[in-house]
Amino acid sequence: MTFIYFLISVVLFYYLFKFGMRLLMPFFMRKVAEKIVNGQQGQYANGGPSQQGYGDPFGQFRQTNSTRADGKVRVDYMPPKESKDRKGTETAGEFIDFEEVK
Picture 1: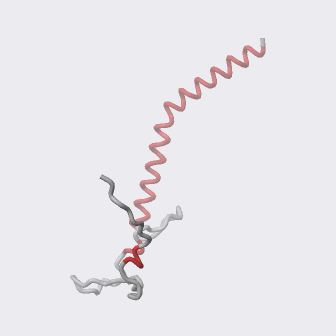
Picture 2 (picture 1 turned 90 degrees about the vertical axis):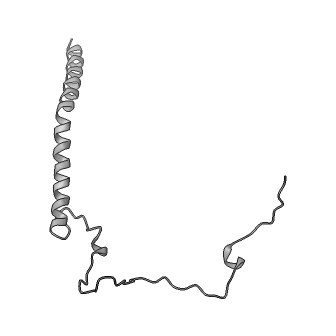
Picture 3 (picture 1 turned 180 degrees about the vertical axis):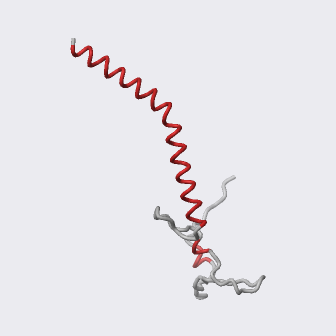
């Protein structure tokens, strides 16, 4: 008899938990989303990372020297030039001869 009461209570708890989560999860998810959005807005409003430990993804692209004249282009990185000793097919890779079949 005790086993039947146990099974009934487990099934009843399962359905009550399922029903409660269906009602409460949208509320909790909304609160979590608001907290994330407010944290991100506060992070960028202050000009740096917040207490959450997120870095500023655009920090490296922010203009550091504002005295530069409009219309001027500044290049921060130039890739190294390749040597001009190798030309044409030497740099293009491996070629395989083929015949076209009609």
